[in-house]
Length: 146
Image (cartoon, rainbow, N blue to C red; front, side, top):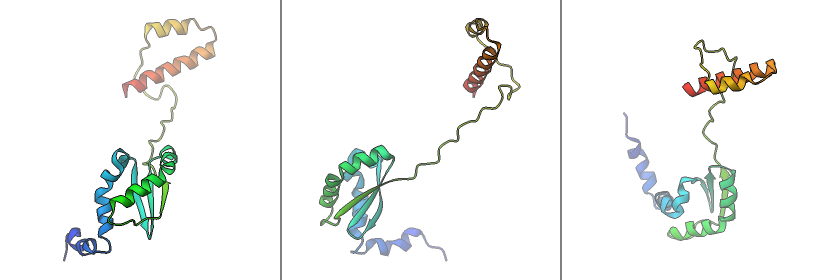
């Protein structure tokens, strides 16, 4: 027999012991205001709350504001519930892997270099440097197309 998750969790969420936690979660955007985009509740344990932040800059800034944030959270609840506040940096979403560039001839499609770029290349006397810069320009043009 299958049941909707809301049906299963409803008795737990309605209990008087935990109702203040639900109220805290519902009020979170109002409590934190614009900061709610950068700060989330990570853990509630006894009289301690742990907040997750996006990056180390926010971590430092919010740590300095910790007593004010703790006071604001406690004032928004039916009674003061927390004595300590902790901050931790959330795990970021996986970053895009940097593209590794292969040889400039990895695509078979020919690249047309602008006349001004070709004139600049023609002024270079060192053949190795000229070749490297030409390869770089080709890569740049291919990247623009993607």
